[in-house]
Length: 118
Image (cartoon, rainbow, N blue to C red; front, side, top):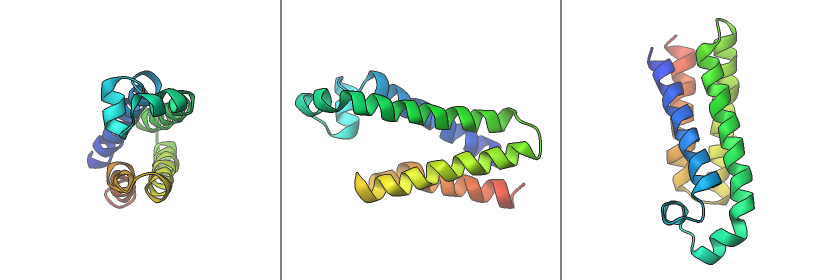
């Protein structure tokens, strides 16, 4: 139950990222969230939309893992949580250290829950 809650939380988080990146990137809330100004947001909007789409794919995969039956649910959860973790570590190394705590750490905790609390 804890693992499913964590997976759902991370899926919702990635839907939020999708909304921020695809629809709010050049709006005040999006610029504040990512520390952008209007000029930078305008120049990077298409890239952010693409990134948001990928976050949506991660959310969809995590939701799929919640709907799937065993043993596929665990395999799907491991794959998509692993993708979230790797993306979070890479983002922390290349963009912002806070991504480690916002994205990678929750994915790691969920991975541990899926594999050791089930």
